[in-house]
Image (cartoon, rainbow, N blue to C red; front, top):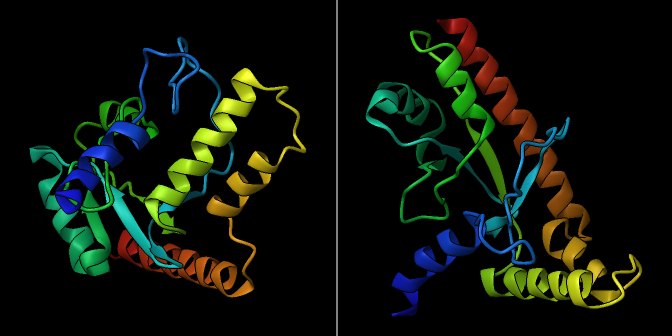
Length: 177
């Protein structure tokens, strides 16, 4: 039961919501400027990564080419693995702007801790932020940082190396075309 429930729980939590402003992963009520660098961590095996790609019929050929290049690390955003459906993501804009182009877009997600540990840290920080004093030096903030960016030099080195590797392989794929 729990094994089959994890993908459902993951999609429900990490997939975001637009109903409860004080809830986890509230998507907001208006567009906001995105970050300049966006590193995704928290889902998957500790120190390992997956490349998350949009799952549509139109993207099937491109996704297969990415699978040929990166192997099983490529997961569709609606799969039963670590992935979840994303609404309002940046890649959707590129697909709309360049409908006849081959646009390769993947999010690299690095694993940290067990999903229940990540969820507990998210809930604690969210509760402190909305219902506590909201100060930045609270233990819930430190725990949240730790579940998304472990204080482990080997983990950090592995993430940086894997990020570089994907970048180099993606450039080789792009220039091969």
